[in-house]
Length: 35
Image (cartoon, rainbow, N blue to C red; front, side, top):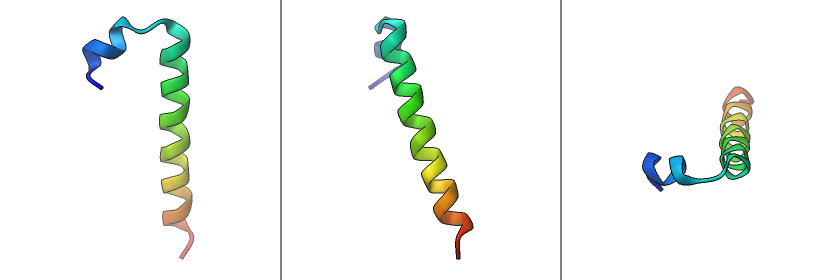
């Protein structure tokens, strides 16, 4: 999905994508902190 595609999406869709992105980043960060 390109930024142009994202720009066409409604606000609610963008928020959902952002949430999923943050969740994925947080999970990665958590797992990297734990030895």
